[in-house]
Image 1 (cartoon, one colour):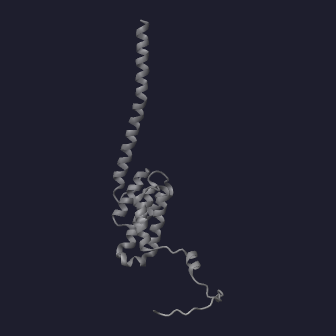
Image 2 (cartoon, rainbow, N blue to C red):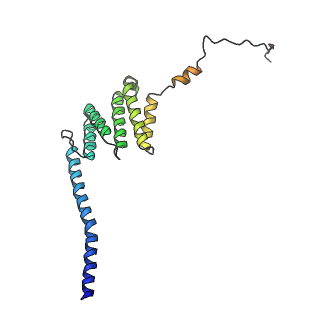
Image 3 (tube, rainbow, N blue to C red):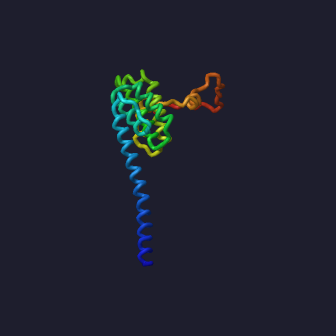
Amino acid sequence: MRRRAVVHLVFTAAALAFAVPAAWQAWRLVQAQRVNRAIAQAADPAAAADDFAEARFAHAIALARAGRYDAALAAYRKFVQRERGPLAPAAFYNLGNLHLNEALKNGPARAAESLPLVELAKQAYRDALRADPADWDARYNLERALALAPEVDVQAAEANEPDALRERAITTAPLSRIDLP
């Protein structure tokens, strides 16, 4: 009789030990389904974003794909101000792409006219690289933006310019005549 009670007690403990992780996984499944529903609803540009970060990110992507630059810009900026999680580097990268695509809308030859957008794109790519230094896509796009609008180091440019007021030294070496052969 005693042996049977011990076996039942061990079985009960094992069942409880397996029931707790199963309940935890069931709760996570319900949460994942709620997030997936919110993402599916946020994929419509006309819909409002939900409370989940993933849904707000999907909404910003949908606005950008729909060609609504100002709305997508506002959504991405709001997202990067509120979120510092794993989606933040992707949001900075997408924000840079949004600016660069808007700058290149009239072609790369006219990108100089939209220089502020190229500068904003470069800053967004740098923010993405600060958040994730191993992001090669952001690094490549930053190089493309730098090719469109190269940065000039003002201090180095000033150091290389000859100073007009600087005194010129006169050489005292004897001049030798060099004739052609």
